[in-house]
Length: 323
Ligand SMILES: O=C(O)CCC(=O)C(=O)O
Ligand SMILES: [Fe+2]
Image (cartoon, rainbow, N blue to C red; front, side, top):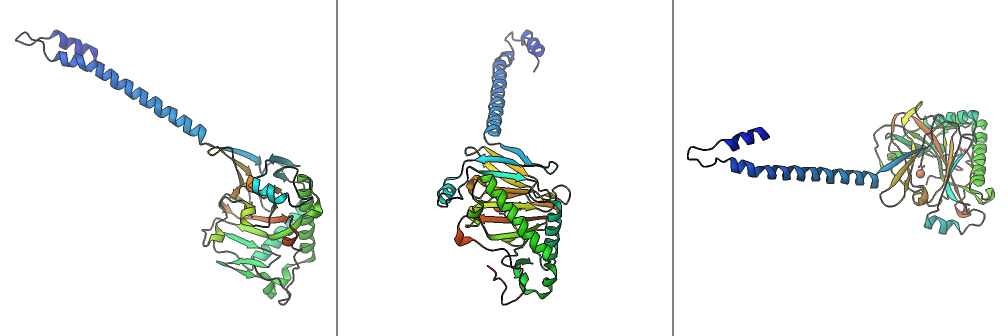
């Protein structure tokens, strides 16, 4: 109600000379003001709550390595998680100067990537998961096939795919990555051993059919794969060109509610390496289109978990057993 209409009523009396209900109207003014104040306070409180919520519980985003840049070396030091440090401390020569992560686009060359991508594509012709995440482990022979795994070494036609170039490149690249891990974490190269599982991955946006297809869950490699001490990844296809989605994400926490997602965009020939403890919680975003190829190459300091290079053996009696 406007002020002028209130004034109007004040002037107007009733026939018996008594004031009209204008009195009541006059009394309602402070009520309206009070209500307005209450609303203002409520809006202020809600506003503050929203600001506090988003500053306290927000997830920040950082790009550690974009697809467009070519990195000699980018590193990030981290405090080792307690459990990881307690365990790695047992292995002389294998204790990192600092826990952390690195990315380099200079360890593996484009020709080597071509050979390995060709090897991966040839292998996956013999089997793929029906649910979007396929693996090919040339050490055990494990190859995804629909909703299960088969042994590629039991397929006679697979013989044709393993050329000397494939085998030599695979071993040479593995050695270079092992050296990169040793240099970056300042450990003895010979204290590191290749471990299981080391595998090619092929990720698409197909709907997951089994738990093995759900590659996007946050995890700690040391917890998922007990033998891991250092994880490395070699990317064989480009984020944003060969596929979309599928970025690698470290999830860093400072306090309970303060998270930072640290992204690595896959790029052909890009190697990332990190200590496998809880300091490097991570996941892979779901691929939204295209095909993402990578190799997970894992290292242990525990000689009991060491494994040799793949035999690429097709002799059924000789061939590696599946896990
Ligand atoms: O392919 C990637 O980028 C990461 C895969 C991964 O997290 C793993 O193999 O443990
Ligand atoms: Fe992982």
